[in-house]
Amino acid sequence: MNLTLEQIKSIAKGVSRVEERDGAIHLLRFTAEQEAVYAARDDKGFWKKSYATAGVRLEFITNSRTLSMETKVSAGSSRRFFSYEVFCNGVKLGSHGGEVLTDDVVVGTYNDLGEGEKRVKIVFPWSVASPLLRLTLDDGATLVPVEKSCRMLMYGDSITHGYDAKNPSGSYASLLADALDADAINKAIGGECFRPALAEAGDREEFDYVTVAYGTNDWSKKEKEVFEANCSDFYKTLSRLYPTARIFAITPIWRADNDRQTKVGEFSYAAEYIERAVKDLPNVTVLRGIDFVPKDPAYFSDKYLHPNDEGFAHYFKNLYKAIKAHL
Image (cartoon, rainbow, N blue to C red; front, top):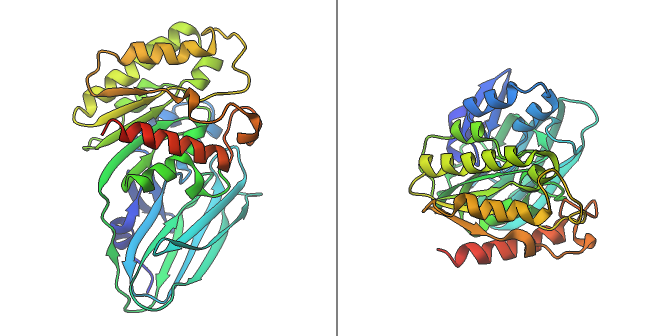
């Protein structure tokens, strides 16, 4: 049986909305208002990143023996590689992917799930946009959505987006969502800075946790006054919109070029100002990210900024420990 739009909606995690158009089901992590914020930018390459399926999953319980899926893949970041992962009862059955050379490439996957009832998780790529063309289970198979323990928003830049995890389940954001058993919506975009309008246009629902990991691009790209104003306004907006949520302000992780001076000043000033900006917000807790990833280029895919899989493993381990200490 080919799953309907309503069935896909019921099993989708990490999404703000699910829409069917142009013959495909779009699993969208930003609200329509947030997409409008990005669409207003002149840089359409940046806008396209909002359609990447970072953090998107389909999670369900079924007795189907087989699963087949077809998606349409196009650019959703500055990275061209991508993969989908299928897990059955916590065991990875396989990954399917490749490299995006032209937009709208159709990708098909097939998995034998085995006999009996099982819990299935399909993890979508962080690096590309991937509308769903079809998801097929055995005729008459059961389909029960998986319930999560909590809900979470994750704001950030390329590192939270997923750059440069080989597989989507290996990013720190994905690892944290699994550890907290959270339905986590990844709002990160590569190259992003604090943008108060994005927070203001966010989901009008209740969340248990919100993580924010900006600052490294603000330090390298922005004027000091702009960084300070945007950072302060962003956190004030989140604190107002989600008064019952635990909001974690993650200061920037180490980067190899941190010894240079920018218009903001020394690299350490970004973390110092974030702490100052949130000190009077009762539901915001600062987590110092500088020691989350070892200060060694070997833990970074490009030797200076984006963690590799081993770097992400350290990031997750230390971040999770820090969050658990405050719960």
